[in-house]
Length: 78
Image 1 (cartoon, helix red, strand yellow):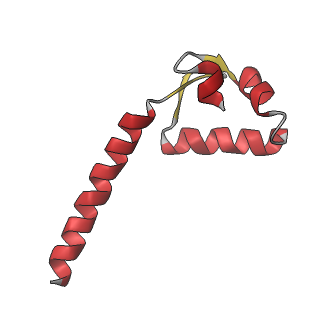
Image 2: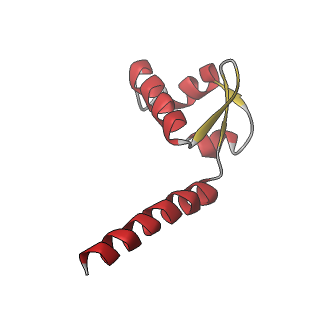
Image 3: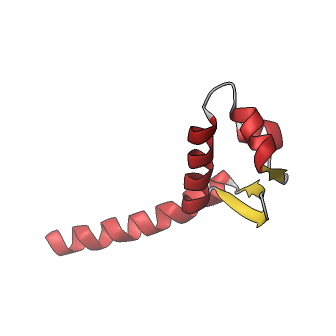
């Protein structure tokens, strides 16, 4: 929902809460934004200003670590 509204442009926390307001409570929206920031989907630009990360790059970076871990685990088992 945030990507449809803002794309990769900078947005502030109030705007994000307004977009998520019809679907989630304020508390759930804040915790979701904090979680997405923690895992790297949202980057903090300035105080209360955020920008979405490129999802394709995020998936690519996460899959490399996962595949390396799977390759080493498979090697140890066999």
